[in-house]
Image 1 (cartoon, rainbow, N blue to C red):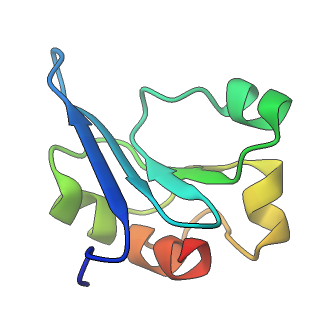
Image 2 (image 1 turned 90 degrees about the vertical axis):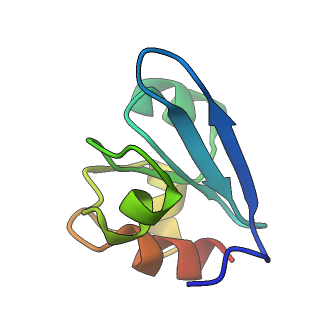
Length: 87
């Protein structure tokens, strides 16, 4: 998947903090809190155990915010499938 239509953010911590943002939502790594996403009404899907953006695309979505669920994102889909809905 070409990520040119998305904003990518990487912060080097003990493990990288990774976010791929589209116009409708974001795919994030496990550093991001589902509770905070829901409290703020943000659409996002969370993948875990990823080290780079390519890993995020193939990883299985583990958690989904309420706003992302309304867009059709579900636990178990790939990160790439979630990003297509966040485009």
